[in-house]
Image (cartoon, rainbow, N blue to C red; front, side):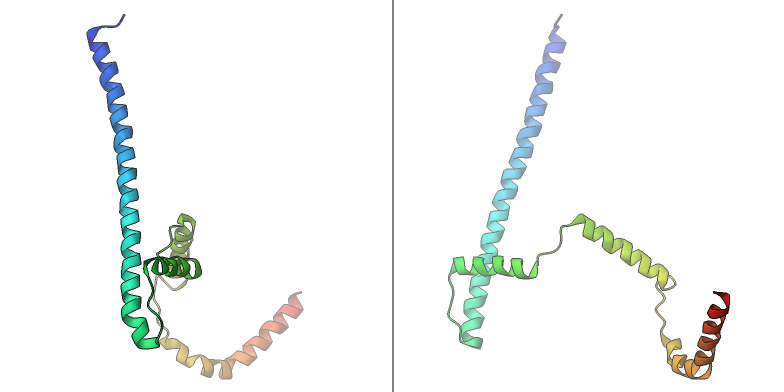
Length: 140
């Protein structure tokens, strides 16, 4: 049996879902418009900078808007710029950073003691290496 309360709950529940999907769709549309505007702005800025600098410095010809967009796309393909959005790469980078900090005594990068390395190797290194080789041959 449908009561008046159940009827309103069903209607308002459905309405809130529709509103939620509408708001999500609206955010996607607004985001798309912002992305297109940003691309257009990058193209315009690239065109203006090229036409301001390149003919004067290198004697190149001025370019139009679509050629500037082409330069941006080409640079994206060649250099892979504008940041990385790959979560796997960023995770590997974090793990690598964590590992490297463990390997260097918690980030202590004091290399001042390495200035004695050559003196040590001349004094004890060759003999220590020969002893190690001898030990390995006898043990194996």
